[in-house]
Image (cartoon, rainbow, N blue to C red):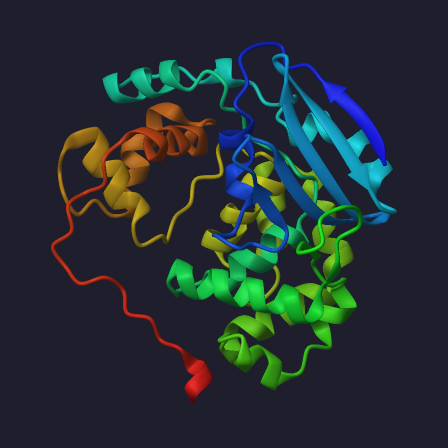
Length: 300
């Protein structure tokens, strides 16, 4: 085990900063304990590693295991949002002003790892969250490897070659249709080029990801929000986000992507942060339609 401590320059909320990295209850690669500590299992450029993060005396103490331990500790401040600048956000709406005031410890995490955010984002394309989370969980349990260190139920996601070699029936068993599995396989075969996107600015990173068939603006934005900590990577093409943003800022129902982008125009450069604050604070738009149905292809 290796350790490191990071002291943030101001208020800090570990759970809300890293919470977007978890993929639902039971995520084999992410866990938040009742004491507020966070566990992450990652496949780093140096190999698999496990990171345990504990809030302590206004800072964060990190413990790491495995071949990737040194890499995880070296990049720890960046992961925790040291390169993020919350003060760059200037709220221009009462709700966002209050959200910004109530969440002074929120920072945008930056993992520096593209594939670990890209693959679950592809799994989330056009399905319910429960379906996507189940697929991620089953694929890691069957094809990942045990996480190093004292986290026996955690798993490190497969290396790119292993993703590309998963047979069709295993994708089907996890409830993943051919379109999504093919996109993941294509991405795995270009993993080295895609990982370079973690060092690019937001538009260039999104363009690099979207060069892979099956990866569109929605998936690219969801990925670089996490891998690059991109404050302006607003998600378009989402079923719920435009309605939530529109209802929060105007009280009007049924806002579409164009309407959402108009409302977020005053926050150019910080539109993703604005959405994060809205999602942390606002009430959801009341539902007047059935929930998206779950289509379990495993029975086909």
